[in-house]
Length: 135
Image 1 (cartoon, one colour):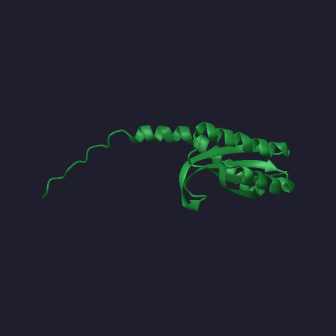
Image 2 (tube, helix red, strand yellow):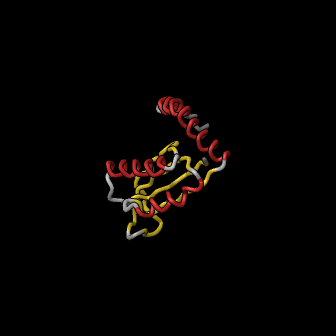
Image 3 (tube, rainbow, N blue to C red):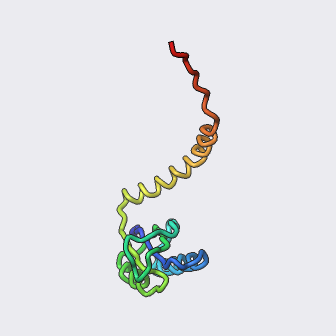
């Protein structure tokens, strides 16, 4: 099994329930061929650089998963047939990229509590500046 990153763009008029349903369909596509979802990031609704199937906006899903390399073409075919997906991209990740992606995620989780503490500390009023009289 190899590790892949798949970016999907869903129709912009989809609500949260439809996005979750599309995510479940993708999970089913991947798991039926022996793959597994490692992580899913919902990037939300973004403006597209150009119109895709008459849509100016799209809802992005970023999915990290494992899959048999021989099944990628079938997976892409399923993405193409799914009406809720307007564009997709599947990228194979090497070991270094996988380590980097998952290391970044764990570092963000570890830094989150300290970042909130820093925000609280920085919200204290700044000390008053002392003015020197002109001599």
